[in-house]
Amino acid sequence: MDRDRKIAVLIDADNVSEKYIKYIFAEISNHGIPTYKRIYGDWTKPNLSSWKTVLLNYSITPIQQYSYTTGKNSTDAALIIDAMDILYSKNVDGFCIVSSDSDFTKLAARLREAGMYVLGMGEKKTPTPFISACEKFKYLEVLATDPTNPDGTDMMETGKQGAPEDGMASIKELIQAIKIIVTESSDEDGWAFLGEVGNRLNKRYPDFDTRNYGYAKLTPLISSLKQFEIQSRKTANPNIRVHYIKNK
Image: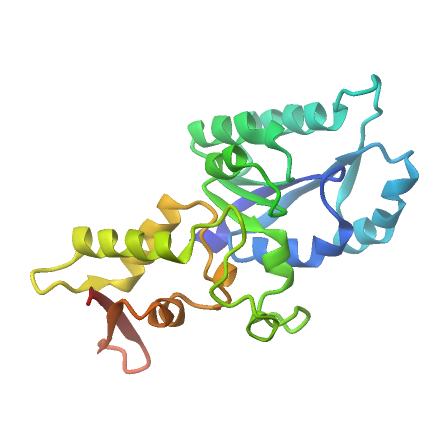
């Protein structure tokens, strides 16, 4: 089960604000169980003092890394070394790397080569190479404004519905991708299982998330595009229905 997946959570304090921490761990719970919880930074610097209470509340282990040389990021090196040590310990099934820094692109790629599930999280400024290197990538701003999260601001009320930010697939690009996927995976009548369409979208776009477009689920997002027919079918379980999609 995916939710039983053991995940090492490694956070780059230099590139992430403590205000996102509750959203980070709420999202991780959808992907697995956080085992290692470490955060990296130079804790002698006053700008990281706001993390103190957060670390205690979430039982995150701070890793001290002094900036030995001006212009060099020692924090990145420490995180990468720890990630490789954890990989070789064979105690986890995946990693969550929380940073908006492209320096972790090679690390994410290497972990995936080793068969690890790699979940990335960062702000919308995160460079595309790092996003592409992860199996899944979540935007912190989107997590913090999840319409299903009572602590967040409802996207439907802020005018962000259907308006992805830079770096996300545009609506036009999304429609084209869905049409291709439906054509490739449909039966003789042109119907494709919506769950399979969602899986293929996730593989094609690591940062694909219906919440990026203001919707909590895939079905209402696709319905809003006005380019597809959606059919709900009964299953042997009267409480469960499955959805199929067809190009108009």
